[in-house]
Image (cartoon, rainbow, N blue to C red; front, side, top):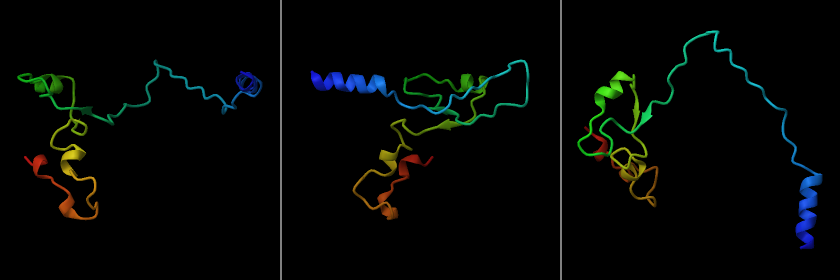
Length: 101
């Protein structure tokens, strides 16, 4: 109990030091340029729901880049590099067959 009280006192007496506060202000009435896309979207328009195709909706909202990692599919690292004990420098350690169209 005594140690806990000493720790509480130490934390209250010596709070952590934070760097200077950064203030960011945005004037929504002023335009300096266009915000560029940088990340696309994860998972394709066919998704994981069987029979659902959102291709047209993707086009309508302007999705033009789809990341396929973490989709548990053909381009996931566990599919391309299936043996984690294999040598990363050996091209035989990689299997790209599932990612080919």
